[in-house]
Image 1 (cartoon, rainbow, N blue to C red):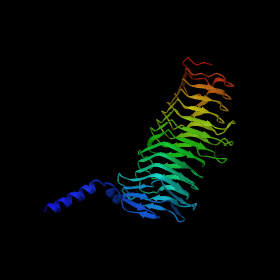
Image 2: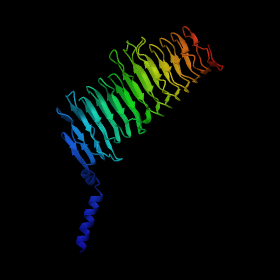
Image 3: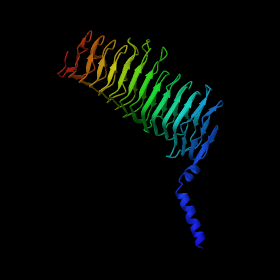
Image 4: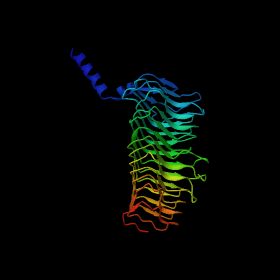
Length: 372
C-alpha cells in the first residue's frame, strides 16, 4: 500500500514539475496547409510555402494561430493566404493570429463575410500581396497592433464594418507601405495611433493614405503620413467622410519630396461635423494643408506650412480657428471659402503667406490676437 502511494506521489510530482507536458498537448501543430474547424490553440512548427490557397482556412471561432516566428508564403497572385470564414453567431473569443510572417497571395489575411467576428492580429508582417495585405469584411471588434503591412492595388489595411455599426477597433503601432492607400475604415468607432504610412502612389491615385468613412467619435493620434510622387495632385493625406465628432491630434502629414504633391493634407467633408483638429503638422500639398467643409469644428494649434495654395481652407459654419501657425503658403494663411460663417479666428500666426494672412474675411469674426 505504501509503495503504491509513493509511486503516485512521484508521478504527480513529475507532472507538476513539467507544465510543458500540458502546454504541448494543448497546442495543436500546423505543418502543412490546413482547415481549422475546431476551437483551440494552433502553432506553426515550420515555414510553410504553398501553391494552392488558402494555406490556412479558419472555419470556426475560439481559435488562436501562433505562427511561432515562421513564414507562410505563396507565389499565387489570387486568393487568400489565410482565410477566415467564421460561424454565425461568432462567439466573443473570435479569432487571433500572431507572431510571424505572411507573404504573397491576392490578400494576406481575409476575414470573409457574412458573419461579423472579433479579430486580433498581433506582431505580424503581412506583405507581397497583389491586392492588399489585410481585408476585414463585416467586421466585429477588431484589434491590430505591432504589424507591418504592405499594400498592392487596394488599401494595405481595409476594415469594413456593417452599415451603422458601432463596433470598436484599435489600430496601433502599424507600419504601412506600398500600394495606393494605407488604411481605410468604414463605420465602427475606435482609435488609430502611433502608426506610420509611407505611400508612393501610382498616378493618378484616388485613395487617401488614411480614409475614414462613417466613423463616429474616433481618435486619430500620433501618426505619421509621408507621401511622394503624386504629381497629379489627386491623393489626400487623411480624409473623413460622414464622420462626426472625430479627433485628429498630433499627427505629421507631409509630402516627402521637394516639389508640391498630393491634394490636401487633411480633408473633412460637409457631413463630418464637431471635429477637433489639434496639434498636427501639415506641409507640402498641392492645394490646402487643411480643408474643412463642415460645421462646428475646432481647428487649433496646428503648424500648416509650405502648401501651394492656402494653409487652411474653411467652409461650413461656426468653426473656431485658433492658435495655429501658418507660413510660406502660396495664397493665404487662412482662406474662408464662403459667406455662410460666421467663423471665429483668433491668436493665429499668419505671416509670410504670398497673398496675405486671411482671405474671405467678410462675415467672419477676428477675435483678436492674430499676428499678420
